[in-house]
Image (cartoon, rainbow, N blue to C red; front, top):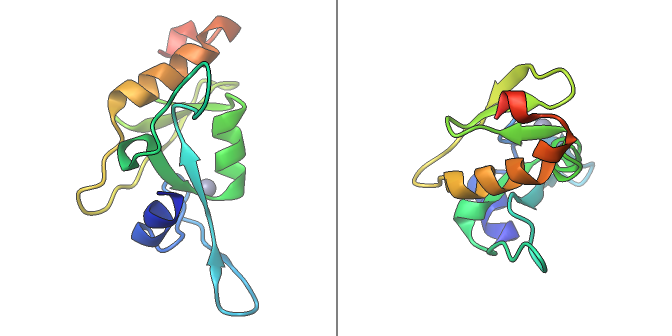
Length: 115
Ligand SMILES: [Zn+2]
């Protein structure tokens, strides 16, 4: 599924549109699960739970440095500033319930005002 979302966006980050080129002509990105896989989260390995991200934004998502609002805008949880809107292509969508779940993981850290 990660391969599929990365192919869909040709390795362009859905947050910043960056693509990381390699010397061999290939590009690099990461498939990110918004609702984490595994217990206790049990997020799905499905396209509507996945984003194509650069390593920085993947990490920022995973450590709660950013959250995604229902309108698919992206908010920095430290500054509370909206700094991007997710780019989507074709029929790919993020299920807002997965973004809501991700926000709920980080709300106890004092980010209630942005969600
Ligand atoms: Zn990025």
